[in-house]
Length: 394
Image (cartoon, rainbow, N blue to C red):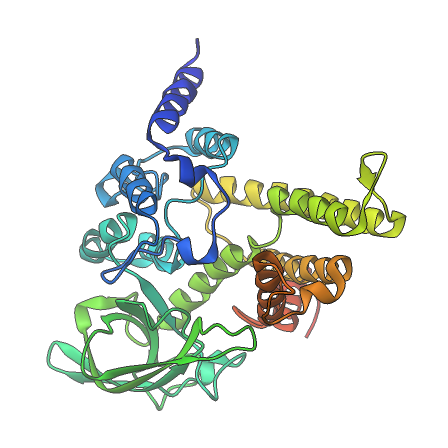
């Protein structure tokens, strides 16, 4: 038996023993494990699963052991992910900590910053949010005005951010601030981390058309940030910011390419449109579902290849814009397809005429409208691809 076969058997035995039954079922929105100091778990097995995976270092399996990971190589992590999919295990931890600021700290952080923040991220002890966009600095992010001025060992931060996802639950923020207002707009920007549980920070959730408030406005009124938490160089934060956006876009792109979701669409179509010889009764819908499933499968494999490349030490490049563009557009198409299958049952807001799954679909369809905007609009991603990947002239 090879070393890798032995590793697979060890992983399989551990998962069979330690993955709770509920963690092998589809995950409701209100059971997503974000962690953090104020975390509340609707079902106790969610916390059990998080703690067990964190103890093994498997919430961030490729991170170094000293930072809370398992130090797995590319092949070992591939085995782990295959075994997790085999039992339909839920992810043990979600959030910007493991998908965005963690990878950025591994690349740009000091040894002190890594030692302080990464283990807490890996254990789900800190919930992070992102302080990038402002009311007048969205797609043109480098126009940001939030300021930070030196005061001894700290910076005093004033200004506001918008679309700060999860800020009402977050403990810390990674934030872009302007430390040199006289420099050209892409210069004079600093990337800094600070605790938002302080008197100088106010968070106000934004109600969306989906009825949820995952985004927030965040205001800084003489908030304080320690200088030691500047990531990279002062006034050179744009370099870190761009890299983190590539991690973010790769992560957002992952909402497309789910084979389990594609299979669920087929089941829904059979329920609403009927079955003919074991297939979806309506030929036109059948072809659309098949095409969507093929695209999901192809994109999922492409995402997996990219993940394996990043595990071998390669950070995401401009191609992350392709993942973000295609993944979010694919997710939008998924809900448009569901709408056409379910008809008026997919546009109900409440009442006994609609099932809980139908009401969830309505809200998810409305929420999907933001997919082509968040993390950089689809138009911005196409421009990046044209310039950075295809080499087309301005």
